[in-house]
Amino acid sequence: MLQSEINRLKLEVQTLQGDSGNQPIYIGQYLIERLKQLGVTTMFGVPGDFNLGFLDLVEDDPVLDWAGNCNELNAAYAADGYARVKEHSLGVLLTTFGVGELSAVNGIAGAFSEMVPVLHIAGVPSTHQQKAKPMLHHTLGDGRYNAYELAAEQFACATANLITVETAASEIDRVLTECISQARPVYLTLPTDIAYQKISSERLKVPLSALPLPNDPEVEAFVVDEVSKLVDAANGDVVILVDACCVRHDAREETLELINATGFPVYAAPMGKTAVSEDHERYGGLYVGSISRPEIKEKVENAKLIISIGGLKSDFNSGNFTYSIPRARTVELHSSWTMVQFADFPRIGMKELIPKLAQRLAHWKPQALQISVPKFSAIHAQDNEPAITHAYFWPRMSQFFKPKDVIVAETGTSSFGILDVPLPAESILVTQILWGSIGYTTGATLGAALAARDRNLGRTILFIGDGSIQLTVQELSTMMRKDLKPIIFLLNNTGYTIERYLHGKTRKYNDIVNWKWTSLLSVLGDEDGTKSKSYTVNDRTELSTLLDTAEFADATKCQLVEVMMPMHDAPRALEVQAELSGKTNKYTS
Image (cartoon, rainbow, N blue to C red; front, side, top):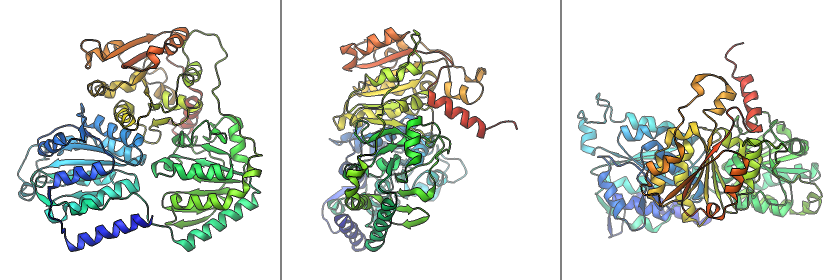
């Protein structure tokens, strides 16, 4: 924390004094060097005439790789998936002015919603053209050159337009620091004539930091005392509930320290799944309000005190707002503030606070270990039907997963089905529960697989429905071009199942045109059949036989499995959520 603050002050001083170094560097190169310092190895996007000069610098760099996506929306999804798996780094997206950046907006909005650090670089017309405002292509034809930047501001925690050489380095550093510290997207315009202007490289000697500002010691000490009093009053009957921001704001290690020090039982919300290894002895499963398994619901809601870490109480993340945890029994820890019952403490962040709580509360461990924790395990289907139902599929898949797998679950049946089964140690779940843009996971799988390769993780496994993949299917070709080897389970249930459960179960608008799914990979890049293999499994025996095949499980090439499922079958959690949502989203009284 102290070193981070020293580095911030050094950068502020350099900004005031001006650069003193004598090693000139292109502004575009300065940006690339900053990204590499932050661990970025891949940039996503689509070339366009206003970013081509900068792309020359990217392509010529020996470290930074250009993914080259099929469209900007997919590229934004890929940058999001990359950032989720490449922890302590960020995703980077490059588009061209207007047409390109607007195509990416949905993906960037999803990253903003779910707190994922993504830098969106937009190559834009020269500073001279921005002043003269000619009727250029990609403009609206009315002289509003700032219209796209104004749109981007709605989905970014910081924006910068690099219009002067003197401030370019400090502006790049500012938005990057905001991106990694707030874990949200930022937007940066790079005019064609600015990218190749030269500046000093002196500032690159001072690293950027994502660490938050230090907590006020006196206020923090008071908060620790207050939480300790509540734990005493609860006689150690405490449950830890982890959620998305535990991961997004880099508090995973501190949270594990608290769990190990205290022995308190720990549960997760859906967006916090895999924030704590699900084979941890004190892990009890997912709490999703009224959707929770009965034994989990009872344990969480009857605890005398809940310590919530990084909570994000969206509808699908909280069982349609059915959390039955009174504020009087809750301590909430967040990235930049803390709530103790009814009192809020601004600027008291969890990353620095949690280790102090771990130290203060460690003496409760012997007593906490006496509190039983239900073993979180898959509940296997008891019927002998041959059809591949969700009740059968997800528990069977849990036997296929391995430690360090990166598991990507599409919005809908997949994101709900994966909730009910444990995932192995050090695995990472990527899913979009709050934003919920269908088709997100195809692009996200590309980014996740590249990040997994950087981190020496295991297989990348995608679960996606036939309806969702039709939105973003093109990115399978990029996966093969980058020599990635994901396993894609394509759930063929003849349309939009989640929508059928929400409304219009038999309506034609929830139907789709069936594709020849096992031909996809050959069409999208595997012309000679050497890079991929596709399968169709029609029943439980065929699925289980395939999963037990070593060649398939080893994932030595890109593989697609068409899984034939009943049209109106759905995971338990989805059925309950749809029923709850139906009550709040009535179209008629």
